[in-house]
Image 1 (spheres, rainbow, N blue to C red):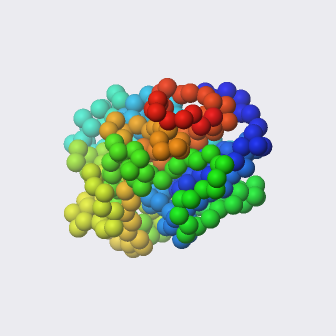
Image 2 (spheres, rainbow, N blue to C red; image 1 turned 60 degrees about the vertical axis):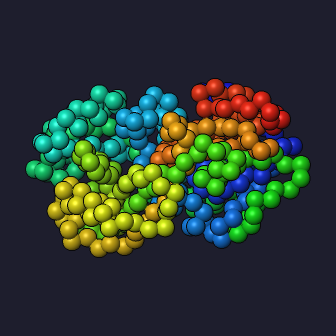
Image 3 (cartoon, rainbow, N blue to C red; image 1 turned 30 degrees about the horizontal axis):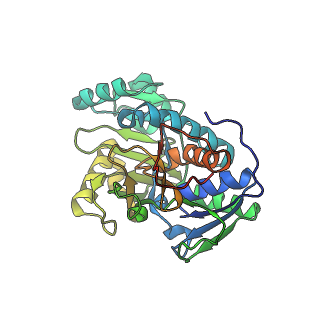
Length: 344
C-alpha cells in the first residue's frame, strides 16, 4: 500500500485526458495540495473516452479470474476509494450464474477467483427473486460493488471544481511550461507507448421496468460471457464484447444478437426490453493486459487499464501521485525508461 500522502502546494501538474483515469489522478493530486489543471481534447465529458460506456462493476475478486492477484489487489484498493469518494457506490455484491450445461465454466471460474460463497437455487432466489427457479447453482461475491459510470464521472468533475481545478474541454494537450505532465489518454498515447493495443467493447442500455435486479449478474457461457448491471429506474447495462480492434464506431450485427440472446437466456423478460442506447469504446491494453505507470516523452503515463478502468483507476492514481510527489517506485506497475529524465 502507498505510504502516507504528503502535501505539495508548490507542484503544478497538467493531467491530460478526462476519462476515469484522468479524473481520478487529478482529484488525488488536488486532494494532496498540488496545483492541477485537467486538459481534454473532446468537447465535453460525455465524449471524453470509453469510460462513458463502461460497466461500472467494482469486482476485484471476479476480475481475478483473468487478471490475477495484482488486479484483485489494486481493485480492492479502488473499491474502497470509490466508497469514500462517490456516494452512489452500491455494495450489494456480484452474482455469478451458469446454466446446468455450463457447470464446467462455473467450476473454472471458482478455481480462478476467491472471496465467494457457493449458492444454490434457494439462495439465488433470496438474493434476486426475479431469478427464482431459473438457476440451480452460482457463486456470490458479497464484498463487491458497482456504480453508474456516468454519474461517477460527473461527481468527480464536480469535486474537482470544488477544489478549484481548472478543467478545459476541446483543447489540445498543450500544458503550460513549468508543469509536470501526467498522461491519461488511453489508446491516443500509442505514439509514445507503442506496445499498446486496442480492445473494442460493445454494450447495450436496455429499459425493462418490469424486471427488478439489484446487483450485477454475470452469466457464464463458453462463447459469450454476459454481465447485466442495474442502473436504476428499470435501466440495465448489458455487456460486453472483447474484440481485438481499434475500430470503435459501430457495433456488429453478430455482437448485437449475441448480447441480446445472452440477456434473454438470463431472463426471458429481456425479450421485451426497449433498446435505449448502443455504445462502443476501445480500451487500451498492454500485451499482458496489466496496467502501467511509464515515463515516456517527458510525461508520466497512466495507461493499459484494459477493461478494468473504474476498478483500477483509483489505485493507479494514488501510485501516480506518490511517484510525482514523493519520488516513489512501484515495481509491480512501473516501467522504467533509463533515457527519460526523472519527473520527481
